[in-house]
Length: 338
Ligand code: NAD
Ligand code: LMR
Image (cartoon, rainbow, N blue to C red; front, side, top):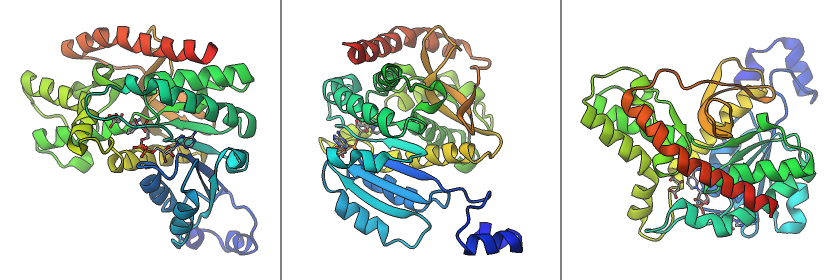
């Protein structure tokens, strides 16, 4: 690899002899729900990530096939497949990062909150296992409704005495990915250069893209900004409707999940200035959890960045989202404590 080639002869010798090297730490990443629509392409993308030494793929079904398949790819990580409750502890042991795309997806006509009844229980049980087998790991929560599943995990970890607010993340990267794509299309700027923070939560109007802070800046009309905001908020529904009953976003989500996991790993490895949006415990508004830009570091969240200057339209959006976001958070907290 590049890392080995560019390191000193001493380091190379150490690496050849199997000693841990500062530049390539061992990292175990676990995917819970690895055989699903998101889980499979996410497993593929994580197998391509050179920061990972051990890739643990867990699901209640079909993981042996996914693990055998992905495991033949000639990249750094060792792949292990685990299936069923009895295997969950082994899958999680020693994890640095656990990614959770386990749970049912939406069908047309459903809101993300309609998934609560099934997914809350799944997330609760997986969180109990994380607290038991890898309490130090960072957790990337993808399962919906994220606005509730993150508070559920937090409450479960509190009960177990393992909660560290720096280590629990709701994955909102897909909202950022969409905002960048849609903005680039209208602003006529190269999409690879675009940055747009997306704050709030991950459902409908709780998704608040801050196009006033987009870079490169473009002079878009108020109507266009409104339309871009709405399209970003409805991005998930756009895919659910296009898939017409066959699930929700999986490929773009796998991309977004891989991007966010990579940022978490870079943070763990001490790479400076890694900043991504995520739904985390927060004091930047009166809500106990909120998505905003977060600086990632060796312990997870290093700093929750504040919202920065908002346009009047964004200020209205912020006030409008608080009631729904609060009730989704409260619903998760209540479920975990009942
Ligand atoms: P899917 O049905 O294709 O896959 C889900 C997988 O989870 C299945 O393989 C299933 O066997 C597994 N599973 C169920 N219970 C489990 C358990 N207890 N332990 C481990 N695995 C379990 O669904 P999908 O399309 O991959 O979506 C998964 C979740 O991700 C949904 O809740 C969806 O709403 C959510 N999602 C979130 C975002 C986001 O931006 N955060 C984006 C897309 C989808
Ligand atoms: C998304 O934003 O694509 C996901 O939250 C899935 C969904 O139900 O929309």
